[in-house]
Structure formats: structure tokens, C-alpha cells
Amino acid sequence: MSSHTNDTTANRTNVARRISTETKSSYKTTELIAYVVAVIGVLIASAMADAESDFGSQEAWFYISLLTIGYMISRGLAKSGSRDYYDDEVGSDRR
Image 1 (cartoon, rainbow, N blue to C red):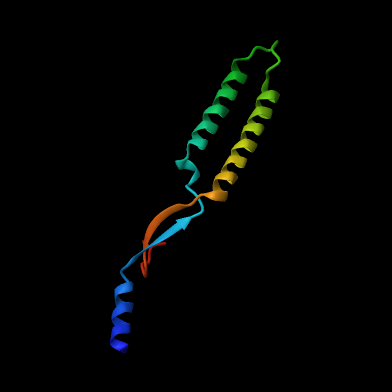
Image 2 (tube, rainbow, N blue to C red):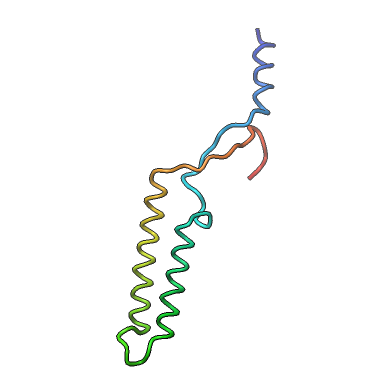
């Protein structure tokens, strides 16, 4: 009986297990790409605006702050309900 238990334990050391993180890394999402494009667009618009226009650097940084808040909220919502699965071997020394 004990040899059966040892055989089962020995077989499980090489079995891959399914592990999940809370969500995908931010650089793998389209949210990051959209955020970066929007920030660059605001900065370009600010640089191209005339001195006589109502859109200057103060407004540009205000809009970038709003974009950043929106991005952080969207990442928080994404993390609250999704999982990113990957395989890991039991007993492996990967870190």
C-alpha cells in the first residue's frame, strides 16, 4: 500500500498545473496602446495650437490627467474580473 502512494506522489512531481494571475500584463492590452496614442495626440495638439487659441499647455495637461484617471479605472475594472492562465510544472524552480 505504501509503494502505491509513493508511485502516485512520484508521478505528480512532473505534472503541469494550471495557474492564473489576476489579469494580463498592461503592455499586452489595447487599453495601453489607446492611452499612449491619445496622450501623444493631446501633446501634438498642444504644440500646434496658436498662442491665441484656448488650448494651451495647461489644458493639455488637464486632459492628460483625465486620460490617466480613465486608464487607471479601466485597468482596475479589467483586473477585478478576469484571469490570465498559464501552465507551471509542480516542483520546478522557475521564478
